[in-house]
Structures are given as structure tokens and as C-alpha cells.
Amino acid sequence: MELILKQDVENLGFKDDIVSVKNGYGRNFLIPHGQAVMATTSAKKVLAETLKQRSFKEKSEIADAEKTAEAMKGFEIKITSKAGTGATAGDKIFGSITNMDLAAALKKEGHDVDKKFISINGGNIKRLGQYEAVVRLHRSVTVDLTFEVIAEA
Image (cartoon, rainbow, N blue to C red; front, top):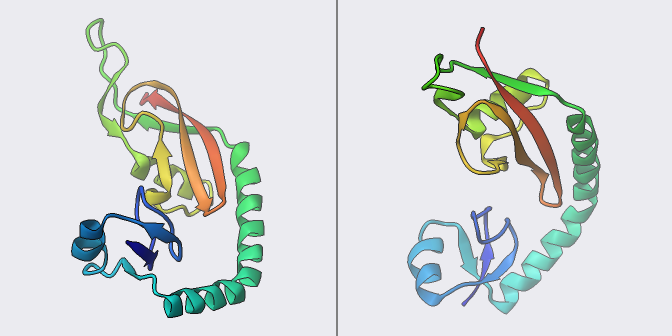
């Protein structure tokens, strides 16, 4: 079944992509939740016209995203967290560091990035150290970001 996505769907595609999914997934989940519509010939023509009109606007968005990406590459982000002390605790932290914490740290640096566009390699962080994350600024622009989790003083 071919569908046109009306919004970004994780692990499937981005808004206005034409995707092929199993019939049940499309009929029972994507279409009823308003995340997709059937990819009929008329819907494809409307989509092509919409994409053509949007291409000029998207060029400026990509340029802005690339400028932000260049600025982010030089960041040295340090996130503080309470950590255990003693021989048994080692470098474990209380709780965990998630993409929400990284989004807050980026906001302090002056870049407002939604947490759903941040993916930390390895999932949630539960130890002190240096980690990497991927920040998606645009459909075609991503940044590899290195940050460090340090113990509170």
C-alpha cells in the first residue's frame, strides 16, 4: 500500500514522503491517526505541485540549518549531574541524561532544538564521560555533536 505521509513518522519517513507499508499498518494506524493519506494519482499530482512551490523556501531553510550546523560543531557542551562517590559507585550518576537534557544545554548555548530531533548514541546515559549525539536540524542536515557528562562539584 502506497501512502503519502502528512507528518514525520519515526522509522518510516518524513512529511510528504511517499512510502510503501503493509496494508494493515496503513489502514489501521497511519490513516486513522491522520499521519498519512492514500497515494492516489490525484494526490500525487497535488503533492508534486506543493513540493515544487515549497522548494524555493526550503533552500533558505537548508542554508540556515547548515549555518547552525557549522556553529554547533565548535561547541564544548558539558552537562553536570549528581554522581555517586566512593569505590563502589565509581562513575555512575543518579538518574540518567536524556535527549531532553541535551536540548536544554543547547538552548543555553542559543540554539533551540526540539528534543525529538536529538538522538544520543547508545540511548540514555548513566555514567560520567564523553558521548556523541546526532542532531537533525533539517531533513537533509544533521550534526554529530560531542558532549561530556561531568559530576557536580
